[in-house]
View 1 (cartoon, rainbow, N blue to C red):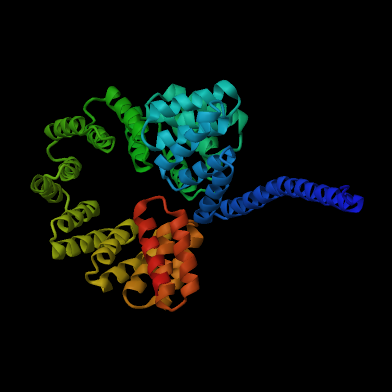
View 2: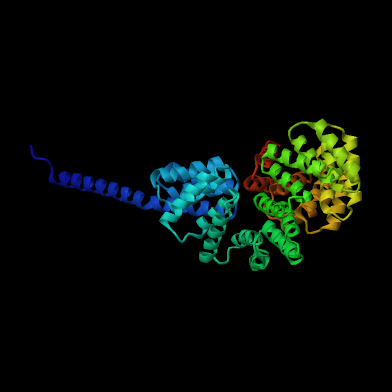
Length: 480
């Protein structure tokens, strides 16, 4: 029996229509996928550039879950973790790229930074040298190699790499700063142009440190080389440059081995670099040469305290104070030692004495405020110290932050807002200030604003302490 031709025609048309619909669906999906990826990438990039790192991490990880070969997402995650100083996590992200593309310059550069953050300088150098094999003109690789060679006391190599960085990247303020510090060892006049440019940096630390070194070099006399090197060594130490401090102090002692002050500072430099035995022997030698030098007993006290020998530390500190009872740093150290031994009254008195001996030195007022606000003892003393610190240095972000926190702990959250906000204006991105601002806002019932502040603290924290405190506060805010 023959089938109905109309039915056959309709069946064929239906099959064709279904096939076409399937093809269109597949084509639509194929066209839609890049749009979805682009949308997610755009969202992630927005979070990244606004430093909303928690949300950025979430979206980049979603991208990788759907498109595992999207290596740019690994790069971005690594960059976020570098900013947060979560070196292990950064290393994993960059290594994920290098496993698939061993010559990726961004991944090599980032892997070097992660290794450097983890303290593996030699491995970091290997990564950055690989970058230069691919791209010899890469200024960032030259800059980081300069930093690494400086950390290894290879000053000639450090100078060469920083000069190369500036050849390709003339406006880089951090490179000008480090090169200026290096040049100051040989020729202060040659260092000044670099430090002057560095002093224009937006980075608060580089800006202030460059200005401080400029002031030092401007007042430095070259008539007495050993004293010039000794002074330069002390200045490097204050700028947290122990390698350069060591070099300058050793040069001073090479000219005049009897310069016990330089030997004393050199012993302390060894201590800051973790060479405790060398530090001890150098300080003891300096003490034997000049038993009346109070500073050597002070440094020995700090050394023995770091080793847990608190009684020995106290004995040396008492000798330092006996020789120089007007040095506020000695009383600040006594306050720290008393605090460690839970002599809270003794610590209170010691910190007070330090501020009275140096009433215009903001640092001692900050130490006193930190003590009272950390122990929650005699909060009025802490508030007074913070107020004094702000009066002396209103542009000091730490002083403004501690003043806000002192108000908060004193039950005055409304008064806390202005100094905490000023601290963040002066030093944007300070996680501790965001956390404390969140606490004040929460106390005032401004829940959504507090939530934002806590999240900023989580995103911007470079240590687990503030990140975890903010995470806990945010969780409790959500539970409430």
